[in-house]
Length: 625
Image (spheres, rainbow, N blue to C red):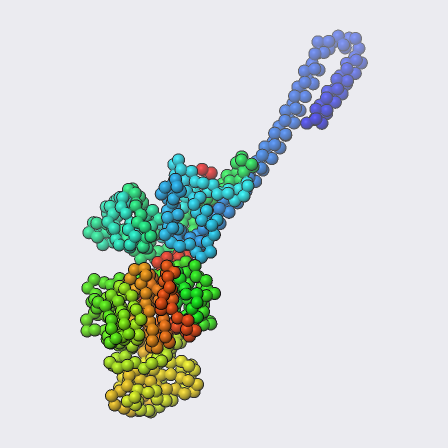
């Protein structure tokens, strides 16, 4: 600008000198002729100067405007980057609190801060290793709603973000997709269905149900002849009051909880210079969310939810899941079996259907045979019984050709034997475990005689590689349908009957041995329905083929017994509250052999099987609010 003024002054000076010189050479007549034009020079000079000044101002203004626009674009780009960083923070939050992607964000209370996210996070455990900073982030989030302003989350001294909203909706092909309004009611600590008023009243057809959430509590809404009930998906630590006009958000468009959905996340980012906001940008992303797939969740042979006896030398030939507060270093598994922590909760134990036969308490030193002639449930194909407790040094005889389920209401105190036989006689001791790679094809055997003593008899199969060395398989032999096990030790095969025959049985050459497809460990199930402090203690030297699910129980084994199947309980060798359990053992032998699949125990799934969050599908910029 200074140089421009200098040039303007110099131009004026030169112009005036030229004009003086020019007019000075005129003749007197000429000067008289143009005497009337002498006042033109000064206005002309001033006009030209003003024109040049305006031109300079225009150039400078455009340069400054370009610089400002460039700065604004840079600040907007920085704010957009902050919004993207906020999206990444929320994705990290989803990895820690893994139920949140299917929960629409709503404010429940503002002081203190509580949202559907904070409530869901208090109901379901966080992933193992969740840090306090993640919890702080969760407590900082509020949905923007009217006068409610979400808190800013600081990334550093000049960057911050906030969540404006998060809405989840199922991808609907049938069923319902819209929200409903519910009246005031209380969700109990149990998972019992609770009456609730729903608007509109025809939200579901009679007999219809849908899985969703109310105020962060997931569960199933059902219409029974015009009357609605809500059943929480998980038992709560304390009852929760739901205020009137709360919203029911469908998570799945049916009651199956197996629909995909989309979560729409709106995040706003800001850039600051000191305390002054210099850039704001919004970003909305679409996040596909798929339901958890039980088949991708490896079934554990041992699942201990909360406590483990640290002095136990027990070994587990089973993939093992442990609660977040159990140190895997304290648990001995047989390679290549795995052990790891998980926040996934044990399934709830099924409760007995109406009309289930109640056997009362089983006690004493005698024997008890199952199944009885009554108790068959055609829906499950099993004989089902309620048992209050089992105690004493007696034995329970179970026919291996039938499915038997016990709904245990109390404890099992030192049950000596669970015997598998289709004859009322002692089952041979040392029954070997099932191997995971149990063959499914038949094999023919050489001739031999089954003695009345029930002892093992050597034989030769048509396929010498039918079993691996040390492997055994249970099955049926020959036309006489003799139940027993075929075993291999080195190159020697032997057949052992389940029970001693009343007279010797001659087995002809090429008799067919058929491995059992019906007798599996999960055919015998024990569901522990007892309260906290209940226990299952098994002693003796018999192997037990069963599946045990006892979420509130401590489980332990003494003696030389081995468990074949799966054991899922709250504590091993110690009560969940940390009290000593007299059934713990320091036996270094393998106590659990895994033999179960999800197909064997269909209908059971973890309470909080995490959904699968897919990569972000859509990105859209949003105007600053």
